[in-house]
Structures are given as C-alpha cells and as structure tokens.
Length: 506
Image (cartoon, rainbow, N blue to C red; front, side, top):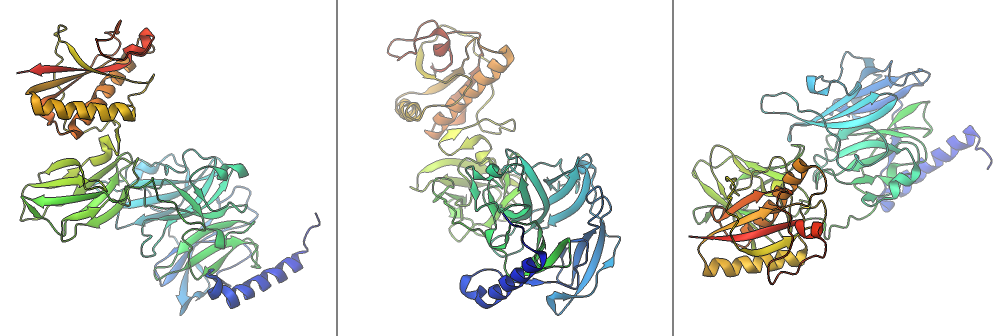
C-alpha cells in the first residue's frame, strides 16, 4: 500500500474538519476546533480546566523516556474554550498520598468531590496505568485499585478524568490501547478500537464494569486525553489532526456517550426498589450513597421520594454494594424493605444508629448468595452442636469447589422452609460439608460458605435469624450413604459435597 504524502494528509484533514463543521449538526457528531494558542511542536496534553484556565502537560517529543521531562503549564481561556492565551509554566504538580506510593510516576490526579474518589494516571516500567482511590473518613486515601473492567484486559490506560456532563457524573474518560487488537472483541466492550490510543469511557453506573470506546472522536492515530469542560464539551488531545506536531489540543463540542446502544436487560436490577419507613410512614428525602463493597468506590447517590423509595435500576444484578445514609432527626429507628420488580419482598433491614448502613449485596446477590470477607449478614455464628444422633431432614448437594445452589434446589429449599415454619417451632441447624479433596482448612471455609448460602435461602423464605444455626465441618464427616428419600450422587466424594439441614425442636 502506498504511503500518503504529509501535505495531502493535512489537506484531507482540513476537508474533514470543514465537512464536520458544515454537516456536524445533522450528523450529531462532535465538532473539532484546533486550539492553536496551546499547540506547539511538543506533546501538549490537556489535563483539565476550572472554566477560566486549562492545565496542560507539555512533553518534548524527542525525550528518550516518555513523560520523564514533562512540565505543567497553565493557559488562560479568552472568551471561548478554543481561544486561549499562550500557556506559561507552572509549579502545579499532582497531589501526592502515601497510599499511592509504588504506582510509579504520577502524571495526573483527578478528584470527584461529590463522591470523594480520585482517579490516578501513572507511568511505570514504560507502561501507562490508571487507578482509583477513595478518600477515607480521616481524610487520607485508600490503597489504589484498578477498575473491574480493566483488570482482565491487557493494554495501557492513560490520562483518566471524570466526566462532568449531567447524567454522566462520575464516569471516567481515558485513553486506552490494547496490547493486541483482538483484546477489544470480548463481551462487555462497546464500540470499536480504531488504533493507537483511543478515548474510552468507564461508566460509573454499574461500578465501572464496562468499557465503551467513543468512536465519533477516535481515529487510527493517537487520541491521548479527553478533558471535560465544566459547561459541556471538552478538549481532545490528539496527534496528526493537521496540528503543529506531537499531540495537539482540539476543542470538542460534545463528548459522546457511546457509539452503540447499551443492552441493559438482564444486567441491572430493573424494577427493584428500596423503601424506608419510620414505623409505618415512608421517609422522604433520605440521601443514600451506594458504594462498591469491595473497593469502597461510590457507585451512585440518590434520595428517597415521597413514597420513601429509591430505585435500584442502576445497580448491576451481580454486584456487591453497601448503602450508607444519615438518618433524619425525626426517626431514631427505621426499616428498609427491598422489593423486586414483582413487588415481592426480597429482604427487610432494621436501620439504627448515627449512620444507616445496608450491606444489602455485600453478602446477597439477586437470586443467589456469595459470602464475602466483610460478611455482615444477620445470621448468627454459634458454637457447634456435637449431637450426632439427629436425623437429617434435607440435603443440598454442591459442585466441586463451589458453594452454589442449583436453581431447582433453591426453589425446593424455600418451599420446604415455608412448610416447616407453618407447622413447626424451634431452630434449623444448617451444617455444611466438603469432600476430602484439597487443603483441610480451605475445605472448612468452603463448608461454612455452603452452609451460609443455604441459610440465606431460609432467611429469604421468612425464617428469622434466631431460628437458624450455621456450622461448617469441612471434610471431617464424609457421607457414606444418603438418608432415605434423598436422591444421592453416585460417588462418595460427590455426595460428601453437601449441606445438611436438621430440625432442633423445642
């Protein structure tokens, strides 16, 4: 294939920009305007703005170690975002925190005041990375973590910034380049990688679990950064768009949301609500912050309506979250009720103290249960009962290494619990077991997790926590034969991977 002459490339780029300016409104594409007041023969990356001036990271293009000699500059905006004064060097440097040591050279820090989150752009061992960190109550910063959507991918992420547009607050816009082109063909990707560094979005909705490429502003060249303007639009720092050399800033009239529509069905908790009551009266205006239970990052902020309700539609069904709110002064104790799309009660919570916390999905998934190290469920932890003469009432079998319950077993278990609570008083002993495979201590933990997962189904069926005892026995009690009436797996090890239910009658 023949190479394109640089002069012809620039001519074509000008024609493209003119065409965009003429037809942009009709095509709903963002318009680009070259910011000559900032651009130089070096790499000029716009890192942000307060509306009055822009922050520029300037790096000589011939530097042997990328970003080693980069310097911060400030440029005053004159009347319109693409008319600015010449940038002047500044001593402005990224904020530093002890928790961020070890990440490498800190190129940029962007902080979202509403959520107390920071997104960090770093450079280490010749690779770009972005990290999250959360401000703790003592005003220090948490240990950094990477976005869940980026963890399984192989590539470089650079110059991350929070979006400022209404409805997208907390989204992170950043530059990404996969190590291999086919990295972007997996599930969860929206849009298409164009080549070089492309601008992408991490939606806060759902806890940064997806990556969307912003196709309308991506090319086969490098788009290094996308800095949002407080009033809309932003600065796209890109190379080879008929600029002066290196990476040049361009004014972008609108930051696209996504190139493709997002399929929400099955991913989010559509129709689920959380309702807060003080006695029987709904509480309006209770402000909730929802955090990712693993990372502590704020996923969304909402306030209860006149019916005391907060919609859960924006939470992913497989997520793990904490809800935190300051109680209203008129109510010392309240109740929160979580209902599904059919209006059925999934769980009830009692709210007490100076701060209301609902570890709703820390331990509970929609349709299943996963125990986390920070498990704060209401199920009691009691001393084991050593009576081995009890008769087994129910047995649930599990797959190897898994605490999971098959959907059919879950329904039958709930039906059994509903029948039992109507006809019997006393407690249910839930005893988890494992086969002899693997490490004994790991087997003990797995057995306990199996028992608590089964116990959660009993709680869903309406049994109170004080009616349930949970024990995990590891591989100490292999099952040689099944109780009468129980369909038993063929092998001894398979049937040992089980949870047994016993009735402790009063």
